[in-house]
Image: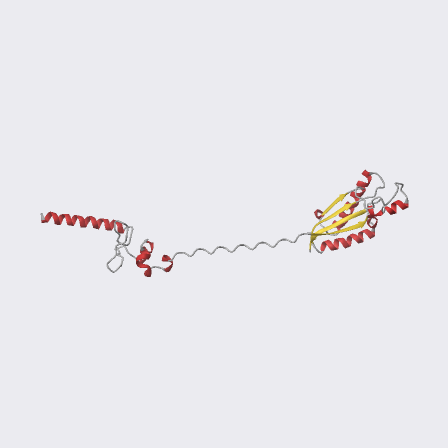
Length: 222
């Protein structure tokens, strides 16, 4: 009877040892069935023969049992990364501003012509200088004609005059794609009903002079 009890006790101990050994392969602290680390009466964790500082750092109970022996970073929660500072809003680009210059066509061309006069070139030289002093966006050149003559003729004349202005500005270093031209023909007179008659008289030609013009607008930032 006593021998059976002893054999049974030895078998239990052997099985327990096998269980501890199996567990020890994964954990460096003795744990019970609840997966809780076994501790001594003084609160110390029971270590297995597999315990090393490095292995303890990898064990989930390492910080609970041997915090003082493990690297500081192993047991302290990683500080949350500070939120990135919001990117500074890009400075608003300055709004392009425009300067509109109305040039009498007679100051640029001879009457009923689209070939620049020397005086006209001097006027455009000043304009090109202004354009070169800013961050140029675009130059608008819009030609106009008086009411003398037919619609189609005056439309073509206003277009040729605007094109002559562009060609000269490009020759002065302004990029061609920065100069926009348009002809309005006789559709936008500024004289209203001030000039009477339709006969091509000297008086009528002089009266309609304000209608023969080129509106040039420079748009950009300083």
